[in-house]
Image (cartoon, rainbow, N blue to C red; front, side, top):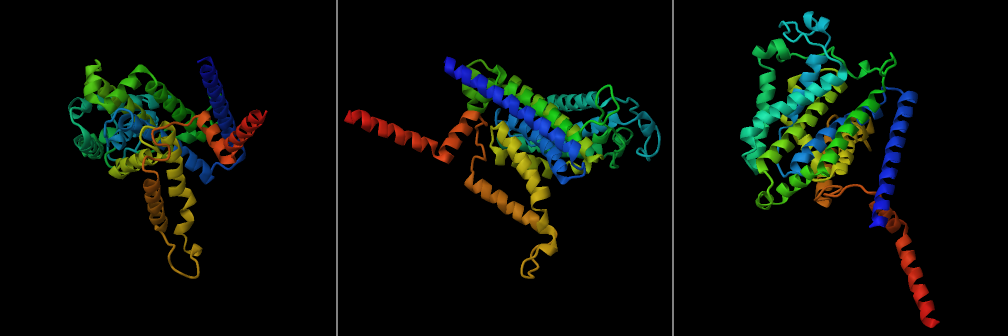
Length: 385
C-alpha cells in the first residue's frame, strides 16, 4: 500500500512537471515564432474543442446521457460573451447594431464575461433539463438536438435583434488580441491563455469525476436500477451532470468567440455537434485524455496536415485527383479506418498514466523479454548449483 501511494505521488509529480514544461515551451514558442503560424491556430482551436469534447464526455461517457445539444450551449456562451464584453461605445454606435438599438449597455471584462457565458448556458440547461432528462437514449438525443436548433433560430429572430443583433454578425468585442497581462499593458500570449483556461476547466471536470458525485454518475451509467437502489437520486445527479457539462460548453463557446473574432448563430449548426461527438468517439467514450488527444488530431488533420490535398499542384503523374475539397474525402477515409480498427476509440475508457507508458516502453524496447530471460538464466544457474 505504501509503495502504491509513493508511486501515485511520484506520477502526480511527473504530471505536474510535464505540464509546466509544456506551458513554458508554449510560451517560448509564442515569443519566438510568428503569431500567424498555423501551428498556433491549430493549438488554440484544439484546446477549445478539447474542452467542449470533455464536457460532452462527462454526459455521454461518464453519466450515460446521450445528449446532442452542445452546439446550442456553445452558442449561448459565445453570444453572452460577445454581448457583455463589447464596449458600450460600440453598442451605441452603428458599426455593429446597424438595424437595432442595443438594449444591453453593460460592459464586462474578459474573465467576468466568460464566467457569465458559462452561467447563462448552465441556467438554460437547468430549465430544459426539467422536461428533457425524463427521456432516455435516442429520445434524449433528439430532444436536445431539437432545442439546439430552436436556440439557433431564436437568436436570429428579429424580435431578439436589440440583444443578439438578429441574423447579423457580432464583432468588435474583446477577442484574443485584447488580452493583457494583469496590471500591465503587455499583451498576453493568446495560445497560452486558451491552454490555461481549457486546462483549468478540464482539471475541474477530472476532480469532479474522481469525487463521490463522479462515482454516482458512473453508477447511473452502468445500471440505473442498481444506482437508485443504492440511494442515488437519479434525476438530481442527471440534472447536475447536464448543468455542469453545459457550463463548460458555454465557456468553450466564449473561447471560440474570442478565437474567431466574430459570432453568428449560423456558425453553430448541427454539424458542429456531430464534430464534437466524433472527437469523443475517436478519443474513447469515457476517457478524458482520449478526448484531448482526439481533438488535436481531428483539428490538425482537418485544417493543417491534409491541406496540401486541396492543391492541384500536388497531383501526381498529371492526374487531376487533388482539388478543392479532396482532403475531406481522405479525412473521412481516415476516420473510417480509425473507427474500424479502434472500435472503442484511441484510449477506450482508460486514461493516460505513467505506469502504462512505462509498461509500453518496456514492451517496445524488449526490456521485459530481457528481464524474463535473465530470470530464466538465474533459475538454471541456481538449479545447477
